[in-house]
Amino acid sequence: MKIIELILDEELEFNGVDAISIVENPAIQSNFVALKDQEIKLAEVNKDKRILLGAILIPNKPILRNNGEEDYYIFFSNDTVEKASQMYLKQGNQQNASLEHQYSLKGLTLVESWIVNDEIYDKSRLYENTKQVPVGTWMGSIRVDSEEVWQSYVKEGVVKGFSIEGYFADKSERPKEGVSEKLAKKQINDIKDLFIEKNGKK
Image (cartoon, rainbow, N blue to C red):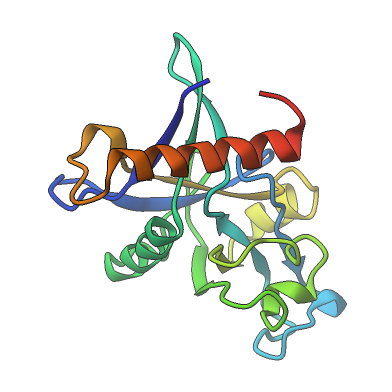
């Protein structure tokens, strides 16, 4: 099955992450932690703030897609994940949010964003749902000021994680820019091996 690396192409008019969607089934298979009342463990988060903390984008994780004709996998490198996280803030998209990629939401704001850079000493390790995310993962905390979203979707367990919306380019359609074809194939094969090892199938 085809595996495609998606990259940021700064030559395109539209590129990067436009919004973060709260969804029932996050493609990266990492649920967020709802921080509220007595569940809040981070000193930086006040008890009266409703916070969703979780992985926004995990590097080198194969994500199944279908273009209407065939199934294929996409993945993002560590470098692309870091660039995407920075561009999201630089472009002022902190309040862009949606529900299941279909409905624009008001009252959700990204209040914290970081890249996991240590296997042990990272705040993501404080929570069961996120302590296994790899180094290089884009983590975020979203404050939910919308009463309807918090009561009807978060407290009811309807949404369980984050998913990104944005514009990325297929790396295979761009010039290699100094990266040898042999090295590019090795990277794809490493991703395939990782997927097979974790899922036990091709």
